[in-house]
Image (tube, one colour):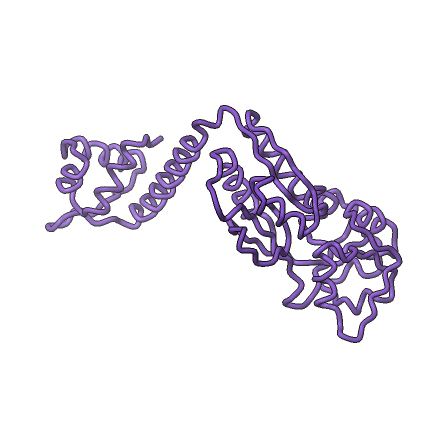
Length: 299
């Protein structure tokens, strides 16, 4: 297996097109670099460089190898940066404001993963509505917020934004569960369980509903858990993001059908106070949350 020194040697030769020039940049003997190249060509049973009168040129095998080398070096540097970021995090506390729908699902998964990775940092999570979340961050009562559809606020600075598509959620045996996509109008014939007007989710649902449609829920609630529990029982339908029901989908307990329409999207924001500086622990948690959210299927 290649070690770090050989990776850097071969990468520099590819950049310079010359062993002698690479040796000068790396401050090593040309013979040391040449030995690594010959050893690797022997191991791969293929030439890495084509020897030309004016220097070296990567062969087809060398092109494949150099792509692998640069990916490896990039990943190595990322790892070193992350380890460096962990220095000074022997202890600390991060306070997060969020919404009820996130606290019961997506954020719970992020917090659990963070606690497993960085057990020395304690977390405090406060649940509120949109206005409350903004005030908690703006006043400095918490370090950051992870919340949906927060309006622009001069007190807050956005550290990240992720788009999550809305869908109809129902029991797997529901008559609409096999559809590829649905419109809100397709669901009106069934008993609706809707988020109440304190949740931004309701605003998104109303935005994509037909202008003449009457949304007459049989249940309104600010509890995502209640919305999911009622969706277990056909023919109820509710509307949530896919990430909100990821566990239930993987277990086969609920079905999710995306809603058509370009506006059927919630904006998930990570925000912190615009003034002042973040603690190392809070900065690290934001980076961790962003990396986790980058892998979320936003539909």
